[in-house]
Amino acid sequence: MPIAKQVISLNTSLAIAQAALECGKSNGFKPLVVVVLDSGGLLKTYLADDDTSLLRFNIALGKAWGCLGMGFAGREFERRAAAQPLFINSLQVMSEGKVVPARGGVLIRSESGQIIGSVGISGDTSPNDELCAIHGIKAAGLIADHGDPE
Image (cartoon, rainbow, N blue to C red; front, side, top):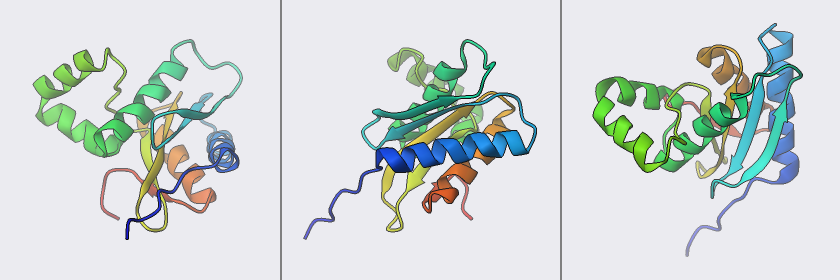
């Protein structure tokens, strides 16, 4: 019997984004942009702090879209970019520059381990962006897959 496909709801995606922004504020990070995608890569939620810079949406979207498209998160993306720059360059060309292989892109998994979406954050350092993405996902009661085993 096939497993029913799980989806991320609008309310859940909004809760993730709001918790991620609060994490940034409480840690004194620079203004953040948060993007939440469903498992098909469609934009569910986009929130931005005041005073974010012009390209932050595109960077956050590229982090979320890239890890969702490849099936692994930002930490693994960084490792592969360092080890296989020609492959990453080819991926950049094929995706028309939509992939950002950096921390801050985190997969959202259900309790059963199914990928149900991704989060991309941009605004501070990539490790701080990732910290907020993980916080938002966990605050919504879901599993944050950052690319390293726990």
